[in-house]
Image 1 (cartoon, rainbow, N blue to C red):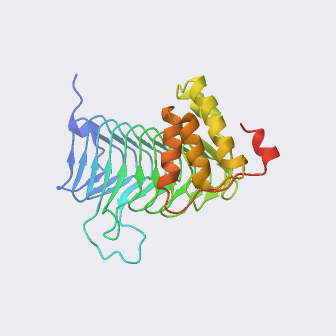
Image 2 (cartoon, helix red, strand yellow; image 1 turned 90 degrees about the vertical axis):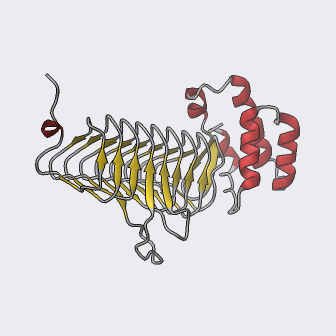
Image 3 (cartoon, rainbow, N blue to C red; image 1 turned 120 degrees about the vertical axis):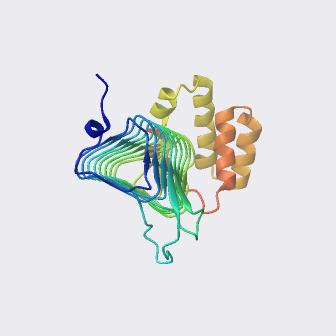
Length: 273
């Protein structure tokens, strides 16, 4: 027997006439869906969740109990402009996650890619750009204008300052914070302290032993040999630039506008390589 619309949408849910939900979207008790919103097929919206438009959400997303997606940005310059959130497919927003709309001072849009997991109480601020396959653990805080590239991990109770970029497969350890960019494939702990490569993440992502070894050498040249940043990057590019992961590491650092954090003392950091 086919499921009816009444069985998919709880009678206590409040859904704005402007909202456009795919026919199989499930909406739990006391959820609120307000304003111009599009929600794709296969999405589940649990009890007491709140979605505010303009917001566009793709297919097969999960919005947990009490999550708040698309509310106005926490920005003193925001004057009620029609900014938005755009969300891809197959994301998980667990209980009490908050995702805020963009600002006119930024791009106007907060972007969320595909297959990301946002765990309980995590927050993404205005104008942020989240790639694909990222993991944002419980109560991690992502400030406005931050970029998370594909596959990066923010551990529990971490904090990322405004306009920081975190590279692909990089990891910020538990209760850590950063005010500068974190290059791809790097592990950072504490406050603004690089500690080594995210070797486990590289292996899980299928990076070859050659690529991982080349990144080890690049890390050593950049962080351990006391060279100037430009000189270290030139040497890395000359020695290992043909390895795509190394080229990505070098390119990210060259593009940084706010700087890269230093490494922890050599003796301790070597144990993380």
